[in-house]
Amino acid sequence: MQGQPGTSLVPHVSSSCGLRVSLYGPLEVWKRNPDESWSLLDKAAWGKGRPARSVFKRLLTAPGRHLSRAALQEDLWPDIDQAAFADKMVYSAVNQIRRAIGEELVRTLETGYALADQSVIWVDDDACRGLLAEAENRGGTTDEAVPLLEQILTYQERGELLEGEDGTWVYGVRQRSEEMLKQCRRWLAVASERQGKLWQAGEQYRALFHALPPDEEALRAWITMLLRHGRVQEALRCSQVAKEAAEAQGFSLSFHFDAQALPPQQMLFSIGTCRSCPLDSSRGGWWFPAHPGVDTASSPLVSSSRG
Image (cartoon, rainbow, N blue to C red; front, top):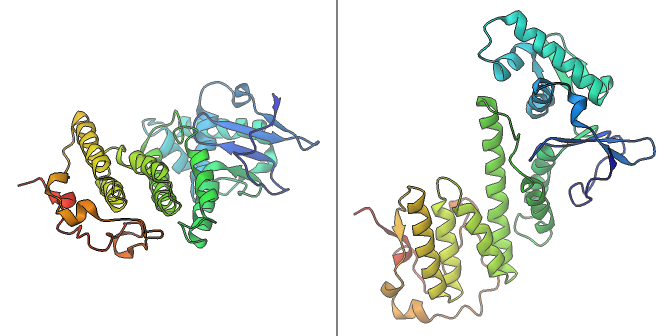
């Protein structure tokens, strides 16, 4: 199938890159043509069933993109007792991968197989990790880091990582991806508030909170931000909606926010001078400090509901 993947999804690949792979959402593999255009690999190229695609995904997400045959068998077909049959499945799948993407991209090791690195096979999940590292180098919450963080969201919002796969190995890979996404959203929330984009910051906190289980730290930071900008009623609505959403999912929040309990000076403080709020590294590098005069340590915002 001829075509061109959206340029927003692939900001840059090296001239040596021959494949572009999307692991978020349905698997997509784009092959570079001699005329520098790209063609989407047809699903039929993977043969019947899922074995070739599953082995391909497993190798791409393994450290160094190499794995032993025994590890592939254990991760992908743990219920097969006959080692010879499982080994045959791996062997057949690898041969199908070679036919699909090119023999030169798959190496046979003494005990397993390896795929070419990111400069030859570009993978969106690896690109996300590289973008997050570069964003951190640029300060995480700076204007220079924001486009990188937004690019990560573009990739990850395409769909679930390793869609259609299951097993213990999938859980570990997805957990790492989820932690990366959380950090990305935290930094974007801080950057958006600094830029005066409170709604956008709130959307990042909303997405963080609605993970399962609910992220109460994100809710705390969201309400604190609203208070810092004098939006007490909005903070109250935010708290109420979050509480209802959590309870609907069977969770109970450990704190509540009561605007009526705020002292007058906290109800009336001005946020006009709060243009850039420093980060508190003791809270993971993204917690908002209180505005001068607002004691969040004793505020109803952090009151425990356990008693």
